[in-house]
Image (cartoon, rainbow, N blue to C red):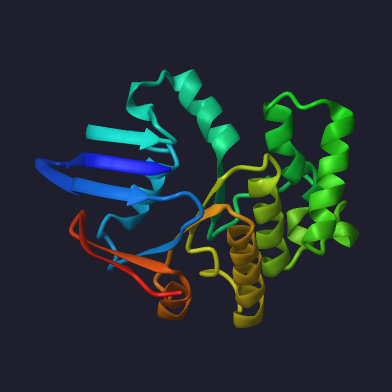
Length: 226
């Protein structure tokens, strides 16, 4: 599904050039469950952002399902991101003035899905994540765990085949974090590719593959027997 070849992402800070990604080669197969780990500043979030088309490589190639996305226009990148990838962030990134249902509906509006189908799919996904009774609550009326479940519902409403989660449990208590991990892992068991950036060794240990980043490079890449 994902293939990076000699991927580079350079940033200029003052008179210094920072190699956030330094000649990275990486393959991720469809349906994998991988944790990206490493110390702060190692490049793991930069890698996730590049995979999610939120950031562009400085050099190298990136094939997503066989398409070299480094050659796509901005409009084509936005469409690919919207249709193929779901994002889950540590701080939820919900629109505060909108209800849970309206937040979940947003990607469908951007994809020009008909109103009747939008309503049906929003009801379906909110019920699936135990949020039916919170559909008309704004984010400030929800607990942290509920907000993250709304964020996951929004990420999956377009039925993407790739979920990218950046510290998805980092802002939650242990019980809520466990519930969120269960939801993400159930999505993976349904065939969706799941990549998680985390500092939590317990969460990383649950993944079938651990990719460790150090100084913009892949320092180790381990797959455990299932």
